[in-house]
Amino acid sequence: MILENLNKDNLHHAYLIEGARGEVVPEIIKFLKTLDIETTGNPDFIQISIDNFKIDEAFSLRSMSTDKSFSSTKKVFVICVNSFSLDAQNVLLKMFEEPTEDTIFFLIVPDINILLKTLVSRFYFISTKSDMVGEIKEAKKFILLPYQARINFIKELLVESEDEDEDGNEIVVLDSARSKALKFLNALESLLSGELIKDFERGRFHPKDGVIRKNPLSICLEHFLKVREFLRMPGSSAKSLMESVALIIPEKI
Image (cartoon, rainbow, N blue to C red):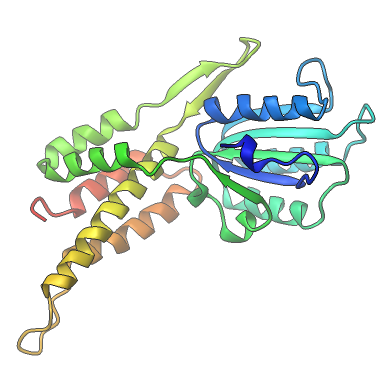
């Protein structure tokens, strides 16, 4: 699917790819080979895997992108990130306003909702995500659980997966608690939005006796928006935020 969206005769300076890094990176490597760009032993090929991309990493990337290439081929950055600080995104906004000549960026994220819409607009966007069938199925199970069982579910959900880098020197977080929380929050939001539409179609929570009764599902969705914003902030606790999600959803919908 990724290769179908990459045209070597019409290259974009920056690609944003939403999906699992383990599936996306090998496809990018295949594509680069069609451009005769080496991905091993090539100082102009830089691969970065990091959990939380902060302002220091943003300044470092900007500095590296402006360095002169070592060869006549293009300089390529493949960057895998789970979450971004707001400060880092603002640095990248300025950086991508004026593309660096003969440089290509591939930014891989698990969910584009971690990014500012203005930053997303700077990229050629490709999504490899499925239709969330599996996540929706888990979300349905989740909302049927009593409150304490939901808290236990969140605890198990947010366990981080790690692996060593290619050289075996560094432990890289493959799927952080923050990225897992965002993905599950998206599934819950999709599920409850559908239920909210059904409620309106059934005529539930319409004004009675001049009193407007707010639908508890709309309250949940408003809370989800706030949780998503806090999840993007450095230092926020994904566990505490998702526990608040577990407690705000009514036990009976």
